[in-house]
Length: 319
Ligand SMILES: [Zn+2]
Image 1 (cartoon, rainbow, N blue to C red):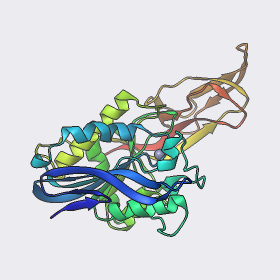
Image 2 (image 1 turned 90 degrees about the horizontal axis):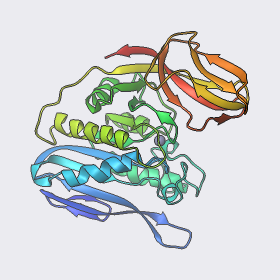
Image 3 (image 1 turned 45 degrees about the vertical axis):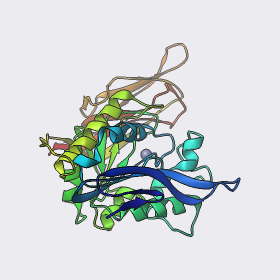
Image 4 (image 1 turned 90 degrees about the vertical axis):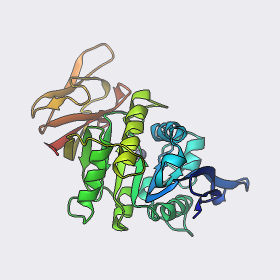
């Protein structure tokens, strides 16, 4: 049986790359998302992987870019469907949202084939995702600083919660955010269609962060082994899970210096950051409202009053 996605089509034991057409650009040329299919020599499950749903999040593209050359279709069981760049228009200009309709792609799923630019791209990629037994949607914490984590977004009461958590544990970055996500996320729409899905968040960087790309690559290889696409055993390691997320803004305008590092344990009342003025005078100091783990922080030190500074993962346990 041929495996086909857009113009990519491969018989068993072969790989092919092509384009998935989703309308036209403003000059009338075809919008073709770069897609690929890897049709394993043996039968097995189907995995759907996508990256750059947010146009400035390139670590997932780095993972696909390094993963595919390592895979020999002759040694694979099952099929892998890949969309390398989802947010075509955002990627061209290195912006987070799709500039055609100023929409965040990961709020547009499952999409609409007759809708806006983002809805059409979501519909076309969701059509491919629906063919899979497992979905991995590669993201990162934008350009902020963030730990490497995998997100489970279906919510703890979803019938696929256990399967999604298992996939997150197999991916194995060490940290999992287990919290129901907003409407329109692929990691919510795909579980609603019966497909276990994770949204790995591979750090946060401008461009490619080699360490996070490597974590993502290892995670993909573990998923491929655990679910039988590749030979080999996978040790599932304990993950640190946060089920809540406290976000902190600045009490004043100025320059932020952090009192905690990424991944560091936070106790209620601990100092998280200070804000000073241009000449170093203290303007404010913010302490933690709850116990947790220092999860994410802004990259640039300058902040306005109320501007986002950092996040603490809360309700932490191990699983
Ligand atoms: Zn993202």
